[in-house]
Amino acid sequence: MDALIKELQLFAQGYASVAGVDEVGRGPLAGPVVCAAVILPREEEKRIAGIDDSKKLSVKKREYLAEKIKECARAFSLASVDESTIDEINILQATRLCMKRAVEGLSLPPDYVLTDGNMTLDIAFPQESMIKGDANICSIGAASILAKVYRDALMKDYAALYPEYGFDHNAGYGTKEHIAAIIEVGICPIHRKTFVAKFWDGRVRKPSVNI
Image (cartoon, rainbow, N blue to C red; front, side):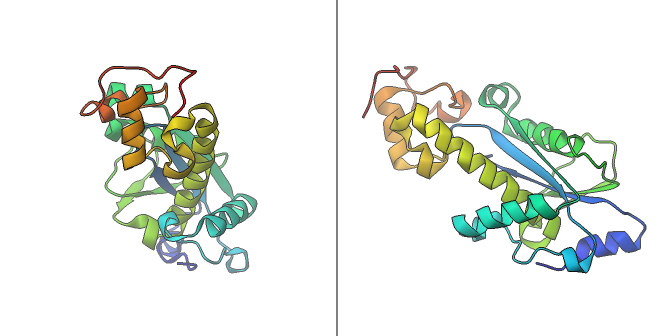
């Protein structure tokens, strides 16, 4: 996915700054949804080799590429929407809001926006949704890498505060270990209450509890 095939088509139509946008963290039981927007360089000599859907890459490869993307991109932006907002407006609307924030946070305003999935954003720029865009569109893949590396690091920080749940290796997703911890000690401040309702008994984790 090193060649900017879709982006090159848009360049040929007169668009100069094409942003790819993706999210990470729609499914977890805890933590924010994180989105990134990236405008990659047009010049062939500045292309970044190895960009792909972040889920297909090793941790080491993702972290390496994230640094290359930050170094080489014409512009990039990260945004997040926290668990309380997710509970209030639902995960779909929270993701749309997060993507909007990422796009509007770019230091270079895009003139065309490519989003992963089937997502229409409330933005002032022309946009297009791309199914499996993170695996097929270079700038969306770059956004997926930045978002995942950022969110994984954030969840490791939360693991130090709330060690019961294994956030350092499950990133907040509903593993058996994670669900068992919720059943045993209750939830912590970053849990999404609407996501754990089926097995949460209403208890909140006590700071002194360890399992």
